[in-house]
Length: 333
Image 1 (tube, rainbow, N blue to C red):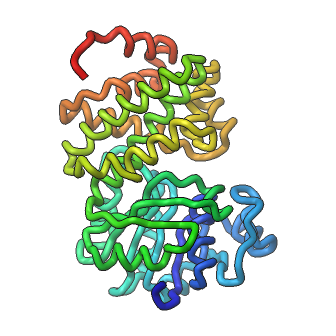
Image 2: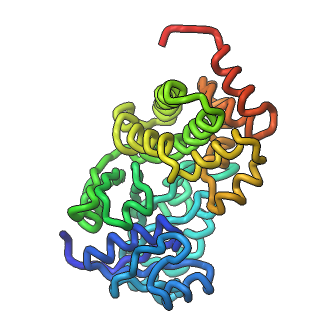
Image 3: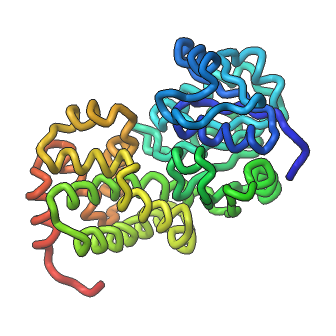
């Protein structure tokens, strides 16, 4: 383990809290920031995230805060764990206070809404191109990470030194990070898998069984590889934790909010009703919009993404989407 560090985690939801817990349990001083002052005050009083992770008590080394002006200049390492639609805005909040030694990693999954930019591109635009950047992704439900259940993830960076440094911050007997230099592929895996989880939820909600789910995961992986390699990702990345691993997790377990969302709309709920029922951000909705738009621009064949988009746009019902996929012209695998 590296020398103990002072780390700022931006985003006090369940996933941000879980990652903050790992770092704090490893002995680091961790500041957990959120923009909602009432929520942060509740975290301070209860010493737990009652809404997101009610069974995980905070170590003394984990301190909730709303104070960016004083905290940001004190820390070298900043971990961003906010929804993708708030990623740029969050970085802009800290930019006035960062120093030349500030390093950024994020555990946000998705593309920037309306621009389709990968988040490292957003980070370069807001923070500059000469700063160490990394992304943490992989099959990791927040509740299991917070409970100390064995978990493996990928940390990708264009700087091998920074990636290895981050591993030293996170690694313990329950949480094992692997390193990668494919920052593009790791990000794309984290975005596309959420779309496939919506599709898997739809097939399960329609009662189509295990055969359909297995076929969807397999063909979904094909679309992920097709899209990711076109954008510059490495094929082998999509066979690893940030690709296949995360895809299997989110398509097969009901802890996945994207899967639950797909299941709910297959059961007859509207998208708004399903979102309200789940009560959390459904990253796959915005990801569907952006990936579908980019796939069309780049002429990438992604039929599952196309049909999920049609369902979300109200252009067909979930059942019609599945029937349309199955009725496509047979071809070699």
